[in-house]
Length: 297
Image (cartoon, rainbow, N blue to C red):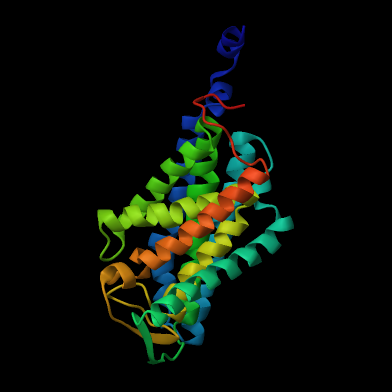
């Protein structure tokens, strides 16, 4: 009976209920905005002035605000038009509280990693920067956090979870998230896999535990900003930062050329957070069982 009813449904309606169709349409539309705006508009805005100047920082803040607002608006439109529901995962209540909490957790995570490296003799402060690039670092971190969380957790993970269950969706979305970072300077397949394990899984579980995207966005934003803007611990190329650090020791401790993302210390603390979020998700009955269905309700 269900098969007969499905065959009588209009093609557009049948496609709307298909997980692969939703992924293709929603993912490609969001990527066009994220890649297009970042590739065309952001370089032009950055060319208006140097970081640390009123015009330069103003242009960067304006560009980041348009980028983020456009991505959020497009995501909401796609959810309403394709899935025909309200984007409750972006609800301001309790989103504002969860976003702030996530930011605090991400900041504490980065500071803890650097602190443990300092105690181990693998990192030591050697001075202070001028802070002129803090705005530039923050805007870059904000665009990465919002864009990547909407794409990888809001669309990829969430739709895969409806089709496959939580565990399988976590693995798949984390792998895609790690591979997306293969284009980073000094990145390798190994570093992409580590990012998938430590960040992809942890941020995915942060969403599962709360069912609100502002929580992983806050964690992601704080980690990126603290790592680059405060500590300059992004790899061999480094980045202008508020605090200047000198790293010494084996790569498995410092992270080596690719930055603290590759440090065993970072991996350990991220996995601790991931387990914590997984326990919360289980306790709140947010865990979907394993399954395989392409047709979604």
